[in-house]
Length: 118
Image (cartoon, rainbow, N blue to C red; front, side):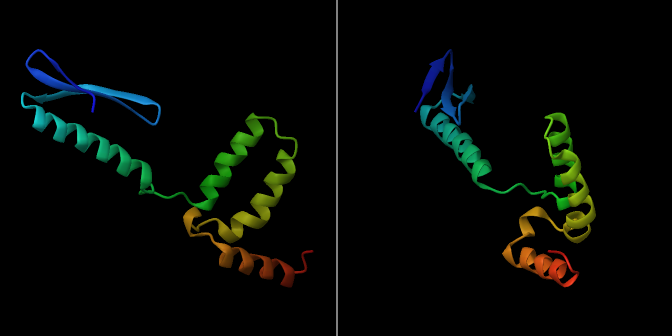
């Protein structure tokens, strides 16, 4: 543990995921300061391993990707934009990205094959 005393209070100083965290625990007792430091570390670890509460819809993700591809000069930008806008977004547009799985992709492929796509 990286606890040290500065004046009357204990402070923590540690690295997590390449970022340095240092702050006063505002505790005078070392054991209480250790509890505070452990609570901060636990909170950081939980945030790392939990999914974001707000998921993104497929349509929003496609819009972000389109901006990225255009900005970075992707050669197939125009073709991809056409196919995504005319084929993928109408089918997957309102679905949350984390909800798209193998089954939804297979249904889309069957739908396209039945429509005469190659």
